[in-house]
Length: 199
Image (tube, rainbow, N blue to C red):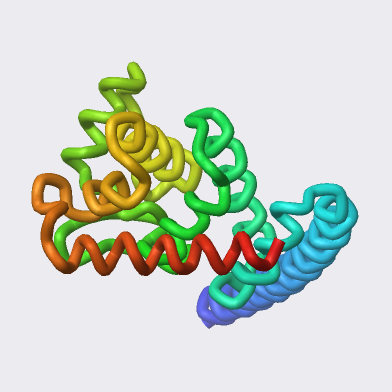
């Protein structure tokens, strides 16, 4: 009988300890969550201060924020656009227009044809471009990788074609003479012109 009471006593003690530990964990998680919210707000304030110095990012943030609520993610996309447009000698407004048309700034977008990410690059195209760049590892779902490969690909196309034809080839490859490809190019050029008028 005495052993039975001892077992019950130990079970009660274990239950109390376990509940106390659970309470501690919940409290700790809530504390960490508050810290993360505070850090996120602080980062947004710092970004606002920094962005006031960068006209491209400041202006495009007004547009991209209609599609992306996370300012940190939006700025990361815009910085990558600016960086790789410069490296591959492209107009950043043009790259912005392509991304708007291709994915509406959704870096996880996948088309019915298997094109991936912000610039909707097909894996087989990405392999060829990555080889040209001397890259062995990349991730088309990664913002920087996708924009770099997309910009490098469009740079190669625009070296040998005028802008409209390059856009059509970017969209349809060897089927660039089709009506769908022509509509695609005109849509991007129209949006691109509207961005230029806003400057």
